[in-house]
Length: 372
Image (cartoon, rainbow, N blue to C red):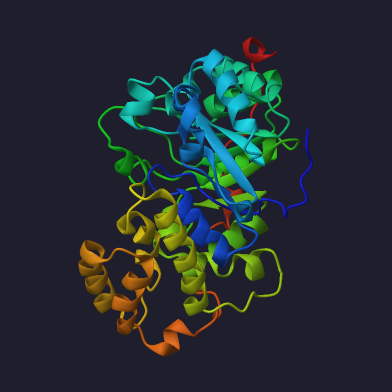
C-alpha cells in the first residue's frame, strides 16, 4: 500500500455527480491546498467502454492532489478492468460507492445504495479493486436502506465488509436511502440525520476509520465533529454553493496552517487562465457555461451578489471566453470584496455534537450468524 505525504483527510469535498468535475476541483484547489477532493462517481462500465477516451473522464492537473476516484458498479470483472485503467492516472485513493440512491444507479444499475443489502458482495468488490491497485480503497455508504435501517444492520454491514476485505475507511452519510418514492435531492434532506449511528460506529469499531457526511455546513460544525471524535468530515453542496467561506478556512481552521493570503480577485485571475486554456485546448468541448458554473456561488451573501448573478446569467449567453465573462460581470462586485482575504470563519452550530454521548445506540454485538 502506498503511503502518501499529504495532510490527513480531516476535511474532504464529497463526490457529486455533475458537480465535482475538473472545473470545480480546480477552483477548490486554488482556494484550499489541503482539502481532499473527490471525483464525480464514475461507473466502472464507463471507464471500461471509454478506454480510448479516458482523459475525458479521468485526467486532472497535478495540483489537484490529494484526489480520490469514486467508482460505482456491480460487475466484478469490470471493476477490476476499470481499476487497472485508472492506475495510469495516479489517484491517491479509490472510493467504492455504496450510497447513491439515484434510480439510474440503485435501480437499473443495481449498485450504489442498493449494495448495502449485500455486504459480502461489497467486500468481494473491494477485494477485487484492491487487488488491482496499490492505493487505499475506501467505502462511502448510507446508514441504511429502506426498512433495513437499524443500527445493528449498519454494524453488520461494516463488520462484514471490513472483515472480508481490505477496507478500513468508511465515509458515512448519516441518513438512510429510500430507493422508492424519493428523488436523489429528497434523499439528501428528507430521511432524518442520525449522527448517533455514526458516533456509535466510532465506539464499536475502534480499529476502523470513519468520516462523517451529511448536514454539516460550517467550519464550526466541522471542528465540533472532529472534537467529538470523527476521524474526518466530508461536506458536499455547502462547499460547492458557498466555496469561499467554507474552503477558504479549511487550511487554517481545520489543519492549523498559515493562510495563503490570496484574495478573491487573485483566485479568479488564476481560474480565468485555467478556463481559457481549456477552451483553447478542447475547442468544441466544454463551454464558457460549463467552466464558470463553479463560480456562481463565489460571492454568496456579499454586496453586489444579486447584480453579479443577473449579469452572469446574461454573460453566459454571449461570452466566448472566461476573461470576457469576468470583465462583464465583476463590475457588480465592490473592490473591497474582490480584494479581501479570508476573514474569521463564520460562526455555525458549533454545539451540534455536544451531547452525542446521551443518545448513542446500544453497543453492537456480533451475532453468531455474522461471524466470519
